[in-house]
Image 1 (cartoon, rainbow, N blue to C red):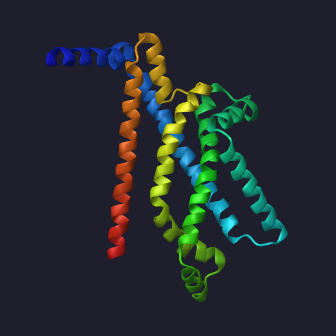
Image 2 (image 1 turned 180 degrees about the horizontal axis):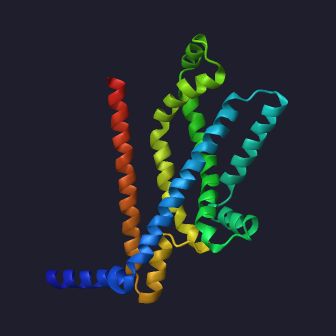
Length: 235
């Protein structure tokens, strides 16, 4: 019974991944998924820092007040609409004339714009969690507001919100599974292409396993960084 199960499993795995070079679909899917995840994460972090700094340090002057209002509108719209709808609007309306080869990069931009709204609130919370005495100490050393934020407050804030940032990256990794709606061959789309050729659900299981392995890898990287930061705090 066990040998029959193993034999059936290996046969199914061969048909799903090896036969007709189907592994190429998965390889392309992994590449596009990782590119979209990394690209969107970088865009989201940059946007998040900018928005968080504007919201945290805005005053009632005309320019800053307008920027703060603009950031509030951005976060409200992005957080209030589904990421799939945002992706379709950006691809079919804003970049309607783009070639199909640009679809993964447009998707990365769309996911990054979505991520920025959530990361901004995470970073803002991290900035506010840093004791105000740190800011006062920086100013007493002759640093201006921008230098104090960049050299003193932000490094401490990032350390506090590191788990939340990695959680957002993991969410992005899984959210890219909707990129197939604009014909991007991501991991999910790759599994669906193979499924349509095999008329079997096993390719989708392979996609699920790939996602699981990538999430476990990201979690391991997060824990490694946290251990190093904890060691540096004790030294």
